Length: 87
Image (tube, rainbow, N blue to C red; front, side, top):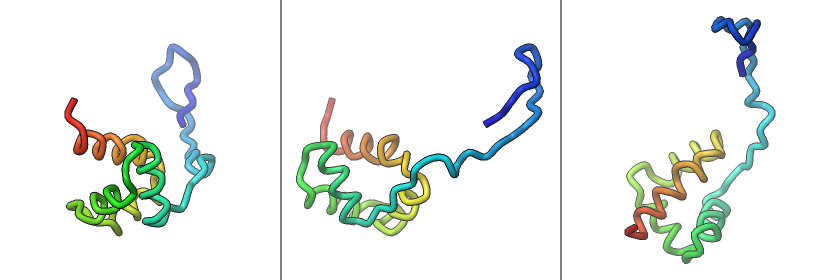
């Protein structure tokens, strides 16, 4: 988060890290699969297979998701949706 001296100024005077404010959810493979399957209304077995057979692998995905919870809704769910359905 950046604070400016005034609206006319483009110089930032203060930088504050606000990462501690957001609520972090610690996902296991079981909870991540359940969350995605519930959101997309598809089988948990299918979602688990997609995650395990992904290029990055389940451990890399879980590591990234546990560090940045936002990627579940911003990246993972849309990518799985586009892999399952042709629009």
